[in-house]
Image (tube, rainbow, N blue to C red; front, side, top):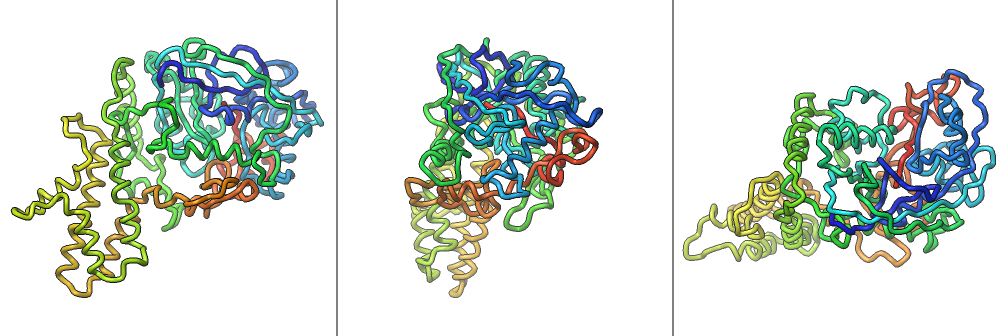
Length: 533
C-alpha cells in the first residue's frame, strides 16, 4: 500500500485508535460501526454458563457508557445474555423473516441492525459515534487473503486463516469462526511480530467490503480527521424500501467486487505483487479439495480438506514469501493486466460459441475459430506447435520474467483456450456432422474456466446493482446467477450463507442450553462476530 493512502475506521468514541484494529477502504463501510450504545446489561440468571468471558467488538471501546463496568464485561455469562437479547430483536426485525438469522451481521457492540432510536437490550438507545480517517505514514506490506475471507460462514471462507495461517497456533480450538479479535491478536502478535519480524503491517480481507486488520496504528498511520457520525441508522439496513439511501451503500461496495480485476479498488490504493501469489492448488488437485457438500452446479472446495503435511508446506511457503519482502522491491509483472487482455479477447466469443443462438452451422464455428487463430499462422510453413505457442503467449511480456504461480496458471489457461480452437477446427474438418461435437467442446471449456465476466449483469437501472451473494446477504440463486436488484430485493435475499448459532464453548448459551435459534449454521453453533472497521 502506497504512503498517503487514506483509510477509515468507525467506533463509538473519538479516542485514539491503537490496534490491532480494523480499517475500511470505503467510508460507507466504516460508518456502519460509527455508533455506540448506552449499554448496561442486566445481571445474568444463569451463573457458570459456557458463554465467552469477553467478546470484544470491532468497536471495542472500554468506556462505561458502551460496555458497562469491567466486572460486567468479564462476567462469563453476561455477554452471551446480551447477545441473546439482541439476537431476538434482530430476528423479529422487518429486515429478517421470523426464524431466519441469515442476515446476522457484526459491528458496534454486536447489534448493528437496531432501528433508529430503538437501541439494544433494556431499551437503551443507539447513539452516533465517530468516523476516524487515517493516512499511511509510509508504504505498508499487507498480506492479502483472497476470497470472501472475512465472511463468517461454514462454506470455507475462513479456511486459509484457520487452517493455514493458524496451523501452528496451539490455542486454535474448535470455536474459532467468530473469535475475530483473538484471530487478529494472533495474526498481529503471533505471526507479524513474533514470527515475521514485523515485515507484515496488516492483513487485507473481504466481507461486504474490503477491510484491513491493521496491527499498529501509531506506527503505520497518522490521523487525518475525526468526524461525528449522523444521528440516523446506517444506510444498509435502515429500511427495506429500496430507496436511494439504502442502495447507496451497496453501490459503493459492489463497485469493488472486482478488485483483483482491471476495475481495481481504485486509485492504486493497494497494489498486488502477483509474482508472490500462493494458492492451495499448488498442494492438491481438484478432487482433493472437494467438500462434498455442494452439488454439480455449486461445488464447494475447502482448504480444510488438505492433509496436515500440505497445510504445513503451504504455511512454510507463506513464511518464506514474507521473509523475502523488501519495501524497495517493485511489484513486478502485472499478471492481472495480462489476464484482462486474454479475457477481453476471448470472453464474449467463447460464450457465444458455447451457447449463442447466432451459430447454427459448423461452418460458422470454423469461421470464428479461423479468425481468432489467423494472427498466429504462417501459411508458408504451417506448424501447429508453433502456432499454439504464438497464440498462448501473445499477451505475455517479451522481456524475461521470473517463474511464478500466476505466470504458470495464466500460461496453462491461455494454451487451453488456443488448443480448443485448434482441436475444434480439426474435428470439424474430419466430420461433416460435427456441429454438436464442436459446440460441446466450447461448452466444456466455458464450464471449466468459469470466468466471472460471464456472470456480470448488463444494463442495471440507477437504483439497482448487479447483486451477487456477498456475506451476509444473498441467496443460492444470487450466487449462481447474479442479477440487477434494488434495495428492497437485496433486503429480502438471504439463505446462501446459512445462519448463526450460539456462543463459543460447545454452542451453549446461558443455562447450558443452545443459543438463540436452533444453534446451527455457519460456525456450528458459534457466536456472532465482533470486530469490524
